[in-house]
Length: 566
Image (cartoon, rainbow, N blue to C red; front, top):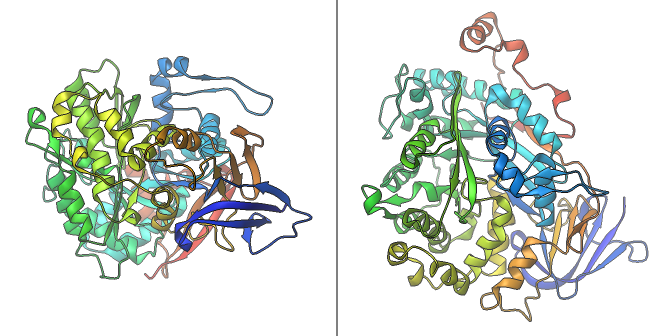
């Protein structure tokens, strides 16, 4: 494998506390090494350029049944953004939901090398993995929807968390996934009966338990299994005015699981959609300050934003009740709602976030307020909840709003006047540094996910590197924000596993990415007996023997073995 020496770049590596230090980075056999033979190595002159680890996106809907159905629902999306075939790349389509190949191309051109698909119904895991296989250039993993899975609900209701842990461990292996995903806990099961839950203490139909029981129970199970990532939680009452109270109550509930060791026990995803204040849409306003105040005084949670970028996009979530409410609220002419047997639900609706719409503009402001008011960037991951708040390749726009008050003021001036008056942004002076941008897009995300060899440039790390045409010595990105925004859109170099895949903003090589999954080993494995198989036959249309994802479904697997404490 080619040796590479990146010389004289401004290296930003927060996990190793390196901030714009001029230094060399050596690469050999797909890893960062201490040194290489300069005479034999390929030299990249990074003088005047910024060098970071490859980007890590911990929440982006890039594959699976809901993504594929979203593509089918949006032929207008494809026409708007057709992608031509080249001698190197395949043709495809975009805009809000790029096709599989285009997803890999666009992430790589932005300098991203690892992406997590955060929502996978276990019953449809085989299809999700087939799509993940098709996405080139980036490593990826998927999170299995388990918050309303019947075996989890039954064992939590019995109070047998050890048995629940054995079931969860089996399911993580069976679906070849990386984390426990919870969406509207209890609400998806209720939705199968035309209902929803509206507080942490509502009772879930047919199970003697509440959303509070589900969240805290699965957080305890996650700890027992020694999972690298915490529970990945989409809270109740998403998208409802006043829901910031539910979000805070959920974080308070998880305090009971926290051991006081500064190791988070929960991650709330796309929290912008759960930071709404006001008692109705007419009085809709931001609850970002309250959420930020809580997070600033507690260390047991991490979050990602779900930033709105003002796009004609496609909303998709396993939260079927939320999507139905959105359909009723907006009078959309195209929508999908579904129930995934005894596991989950789902909904898809095209949606256009507009600057002149007061609610949309306040949502845009809420996301930025959260990022700027939460003091510790290690608690924050920058996402758009792709494609919900906007396409992932709009990330450089978000970076600019964060590192430049001037950039966000320019956008705010174009927003609805009522939203301008309600926005907290004019009162916030903070501007992110490049070091903080690296935390919320790389270092912090890798740390939150428990990916020890990603998100940094230390010796032994995977040789995933992004080089940008940003000179921190000569450029004030806060004042002259557009060149940096352009640079983040098109990396000068992207290196994946020690191979240059982007050079001078263009793709120069295509390689497959790995699919990471956890082999969670419990001291006592789940007992596979006739009773369990009978339940599969009773609960699902797919019987036990056909349910698990077998090895041939994953082209380039990376099995990570975890020893559980139970």
